[in-house]
Length: 267
Image (cartoon, rainbow, N blue to C red; front, top):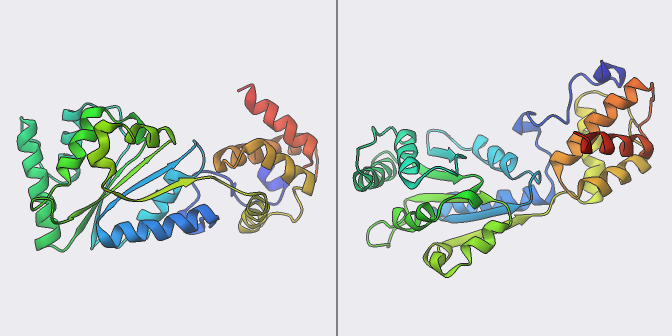
């Protein structure tokens, strides 16, 4: 087993690692502060970044720290659904049996949010992941759905998460009313070189692995290959450990990293 060969008790580069072990990159620190603002002010946020930059993990980390007695989180990633299906999903998440008509679903959703906020003192946070795929009808309806008391009150936080193309989509004139509601935005850029080095070292330490598994040239090669992507870096690291064990290498060097990158490219 490649993990035990390097003294690792588990794979610390696995995507399923617990959020309490989240490595705080500058991205994550900034995002946590901005999401705290969204949470406290019941406003709207736009979080973007290329695939693998850690957007969903950051949101998962944010959600895990919320008091479930004070916050109701609705996370939706089925972004290719129709507007009608979207409303049905919102109803289900809010504990509403969806009425047949969309207008009735809309009314009951708003009433439920008001009930949670005013009567039960529970704040609703809606997270829409992969939002670049949301249909125009859904994006248009979001601004209406967030309209309470003649647009004088905020009773729900909305977080749109997606790839950078989402910024371009929301700049279209048709979405002006929605984009004007965005008070917090951030584009995740991923690791810098020092963060990557520290990330690898702290992750290996977390799994009680051997010191110095990756030499400096290997870390440089990983950084050049991953383009800041946490997901890509994790894949390269895991693949290099597998190859390294098969070749009985105690230390991973840049040649092994390049071999891992090529293997991953071949699928």
